[in-house]
Length: 539
Picture 1 (cartoon, rainbow, N blue to C red):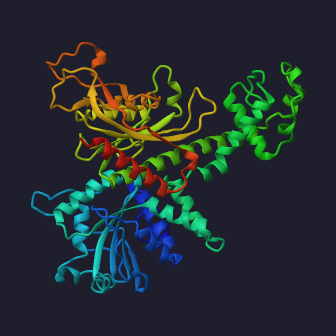
Picture 2: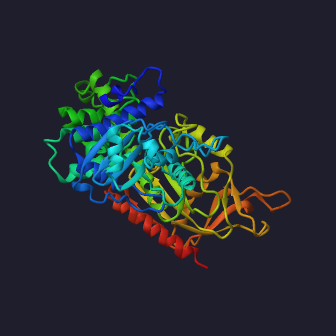
Picture 3: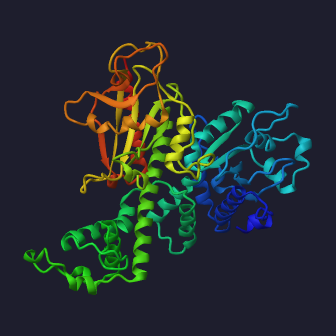
């Protein structure tokens, strides 16, 4: 990250989000340039898309001149990176924990929008270009194609698209503005690791680890995750079933502890360490009610083993949920290309569902066409901005304050629900369930016919929580527990009359998470879901 250091980006009084952004930009791009990995740079940039979904054309860039400069001073503009590849000049504006700065024009009519100003800075009038550094002038004069690439996190894509659209509206249709994500680079690194021998390119593994540490990993499938981390817990559970339940003991460092989950953590640690005590058989079924003291004494858990077991298990769970989030982000992107807007949904944690305060049973999405209802303006869970460090429940409170959702009468909602575990089914297989709910209506007439149904954002979860009912054979109607907001002057006979009802015209589709290995599979799911929505929305 020495580029950030020599350009004075690491001063102590700099805002934390700016320092994080500059360090990430300098480390990632600087590593690629120092390694001479222009093929990887080009492959990453080819993931960029404009507002209409068109890719970035680098022309004859593969064999042409290559040049870069961090934080060049272009009069009053200082972009993060200027990059020349062949006949193309790219201005890179990188974001990590923030969004675009400035908007519109000031009181004197001067342009304030960051991306719009950057676009104009690489298309300067002659008198302004004369003030640029010599190498920058040479790069501009020597290229025939120039564009701005807005580099963001995948979870910020929805917000970034709106920012890009606003900037392009200030410049006109000729402006070439593109969106690119850090996760696209992670995907390229992962693909190279799977098909090539990287023993002489150790820096690629380190770069991939950095992106993962910053939460910028692309969806990579659950099988690799399973084989390295989650499988330990499965093996531990099998050993526990063979050993049978053990007496409650109130000391954490003992072989068997007070809570089943802690027993699994300890067993997982000892399995990985190859402890011989785990491989011993219990002395016969006729002695099942006798405490196995030999096991209790010989298998006593050491302090370091307990510490490592807890850390390993917690990291495995966090990695699993992180992969689910990456999967949902890929789905959001793929569905967005078909014109859908995502409504993030998580389960409640009220009475009987307290475990959701610790680990969510499932995470999901409701998808509506961009022109239907209100395209969700709130940020996703954990995204930058208000609520980024809040709990899920606090974020749900923010969503309720943000205003209700609109569901047009007779419309269809596509949905995806990723169920990670089932609290009442020990043998449940994690799955992705998707389908379409059509012909939105109420149980009885009386609602104004031309008014959309309005539902509070916090109760959208009640739609997905009832999905299992729609899977029962023969069910063609799904009665949810999501109530609509009844307009003043409208009277319905009882509370049940104001809950949403949908038609289930086609069976829902279930895919085991274990079977989802590639982004192409996610894109196929989105394509099929969009086609199903189109069929069920037709008159």
